[in-house]
Image (tube, rainbow, N blue to C red; front, side):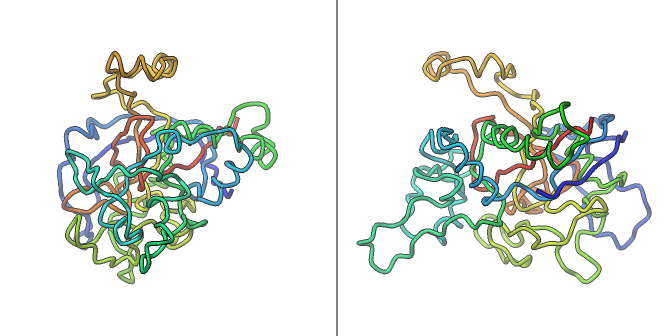
Length: 332
């Protein structure tokens, strides 16, 4: 896995409008949703760390799964995961989309979905004329993974990273980045910029710099960026001077930072010790963790979160078709 080394930095995290005079900049004046807690701005200082240049791919996760056959990913354990219903219907004509999310009915909880079957099991052989489901493409970001899955993967990869980065030997394990580390990496050394690359949404040639939703969300994606769902590794150029890809758009990325605001059960250690029956009996929800970067489903009018300072959250056991991760490792 290609990594980038970021030296110790001090910066301000969160949303602030661009402060530079830029009459041609096409960032969008808006106010973040209060529930996102993007403000007040937060001061953050980090020690030097490495972070993956790309999100962890399906191929990467497949290597982990082959090496750890006893590990059961969260979606496999639950035997379901959330899929974006309009896209799932295009990809798998016999997928059952009846179990819609109460608040956002474009999400369906589909049985049999996992990291390697992102739109559900294949149609029965007797379903003449119906296409088989598309297998998860190897060079796309892995999705349908929980915080638990991401942590296990990073831990598994740790000895490989130690061999490749001998200056980190014997000090720290490979792990998820903190929210502060992730945003530090995304900002690429720039201050008060909306996107990882600056304030202009499009490149100088008018090309998109990231994979997100264009059109009328959720039903009419114009695919002006060339993608209806996740995009493969390297589909877009590096998004900042650190040489990092897909920090914004494509798939949301887990961090190891508890969300805390609004979380129903913030004590992760205590929660993990509870049995599933105790959690159900006492109606204890899983703790919320912060995620960053937005995804191919973010759209200006609904989810303008393909920005460096944007943030959201899910419970640690959530899995979905637009949620992945990348790993980080302290330098010393």
